[in-house]
Image (cartoon, rainbow, N blue to C red; front, side):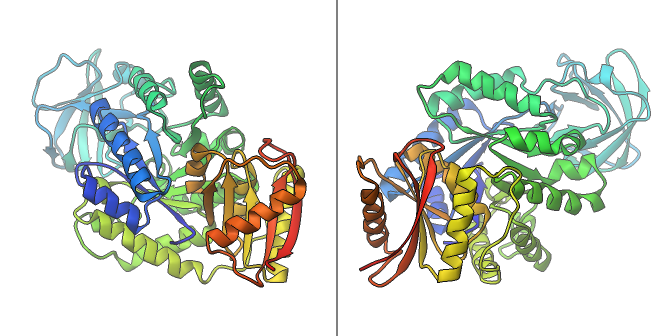
Length: 472
């Protein structure tokens, strides 16, 4: 499998056990449920299916709950899809008690209050565009500048407006509750604007779960200008980020999107946070069996930039060739990774002992030609640092928790091994590393390898040991 991790969105095209199983076998690491389109009944059913497949295939499968978020979406249309042409006049409203044919109802009741005459209303990542020409108490009258198809659930952007949306809607709270009840590995927050948004959700999860259960990692979606303005602060408090190029390309001008992508990925490296690149990765494969050359180049550049993972959305949720999409990603990523340097030198923003030990381990492994790096980790903390340095050799993370193993499914180049064995002596750690390395076939007799651990073992934040060994 490629070192670059693959996340796939489930939807009508993939709500099928055999299809999902084949996607796992093809290389999918994490499945995303988009709560803008997924109801609780479907989520419960396929969450259970994924956990069944996990046992059947004997490999962790990550689950991400992507919350609807404060982004405004189309809630009701007289007919879905609705086709509009340039010059058509429609009315937007946040009031649900409307049935007229040319009215678009959005899911933000104060929409009319927050938007003014002259504002641009962009639908479906800006593919369909309107300009507000008249405002009344209940309606915004808008003329279509760029026509196209509009469906219920598609996003609505008004650049520079809608600043008072809450980070969580009532729907988000209900979706978060069932996600925590069933147990997800990642919660993706849509339209994060400040570090306070992330802290608020983390505190909410803490109040619901306490210390009894493993908390999901909070993955902040960077998809608006406000997030870019507050990026360092958001990066510090998030467990990872998504470069959400769809809405980002609506909020800022298109030529700035690749620059924003590179900035986000660079900062994620410095803060040792996993970063996922998303949107239109293989959009042509929604309807075609092969990708375009531009898409393949885009994948390659995302990997060269430093993406830990790639996320496909419509390609697998509504596309015709979901398994082929995963196979294509796997093939391109594996090929591109052969051209990566032996490791990447990064100046971390902060350098506690764990980061220093991780860097020393990677540099030693590269210089000595080690066959593998074996890291013991309780929370995935140390594995993050090693992953960011991108060593060419295999990285095997040993953890006592399946929950932690699933989280490492978004870390570049990190494989996992779940174990729950008590270790009393320091030397026993290194013996255990060799035993598991041989068992997993990443080591064989005569191989040199590097072990990273903390003593006492399985104590969070105590990484303080590194040893170079040769299999006797």
